Length: 223
Figure 1 (cartoon, one colour):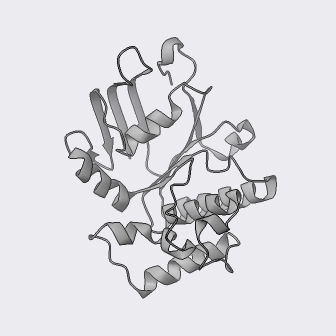
Figure 2: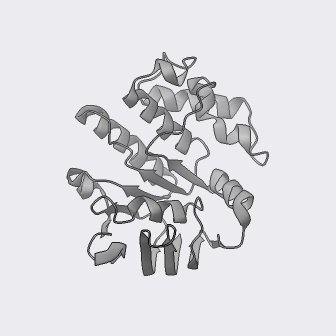
């Protein structure tokens, strides 16, 4: 599902550098990226999702090479094929909870918004305990509630790959377990691939494989 070859990326002159010779993540695999802050976990998932473009090397997702697609092409590919759960949620303040969940259908003309999608959005919100908050705006939600909305938005397109940057970082233990169960169930039902960035080592037993990006010095990665 994901293939990385001879990847390198750096932030500005003298800034952080990420180097990864090779990485393969199979369809249906559940993988956790761990490592200290600054080791490149978020950078790597941004590259896999096409949010960032590498300086060299290739990133292939589901048989599609992201390099050379341009910003708009990578964005449309991501919206249609990758469910991304951002660390800062990236909810739109002027949209209601259910509208934020349906956002991929509002911004990508290749996705058709219909009654089935609207019902799916409500069912997802119901499954994470937000059944009475369909019409609330993000400012009316707690931090943990906004995080659950972000999870639902990532699942709404039934993607074949789900990428999550600290999806449980601000949840209490009960809700943390619930969110992970929801994500895992969706992944299993669709034979999808799951990539999660986490600092919480208590979660690692839920994954098929753990990749430590902090083993090598200087911001470079090793698997």
